[in-house]
Length: 218
Image (cartoon, rainbow, N blue to C red; front, top):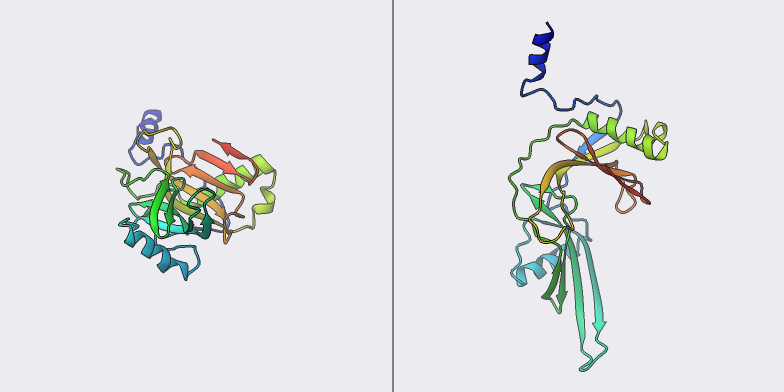
């Protein structure tokens, strides 16, 4: 009997680290690449900037747009129109949670870019964890780091499935992605969406927990 149990535990469909489901409200959030969060009148303006400059924006979700009139402080003291667009990157239709890009334009001509473009990944789009398991992990972390787990027992949460770069900020090495979940309060609006957390889809390991003041890594 003991041997049989051991063999059963080695089946390919057995979870690496089984997690219990948490009771309570949690919904899966699907944020599409076309779900831009800049002002609606600015969307065609930004779209035109990319088209005019030959930049493919098919994998970018616009989340911030700013415009300013800039005066140089040196001859010939030129005045120019400055526009900056910040975007989220998508691969396989899923958002990469920590791979933002910023594009700058002067008089509607491309001038600079910050961030590292990511064009593909070998990862699939099939999640392993359930949203119930994610709720339990999140409430446990709220209690662990803020001693406020009881206060969140009746709070509805959202969980978004996507990718996260594990070697961000480490130089020019190719981006290393893993599948992950980003959990926040339902209807929380950035940047006032704390607390928030990110978990590995493979086993529910915490990648970070952010209360708005401190970010705790794993």
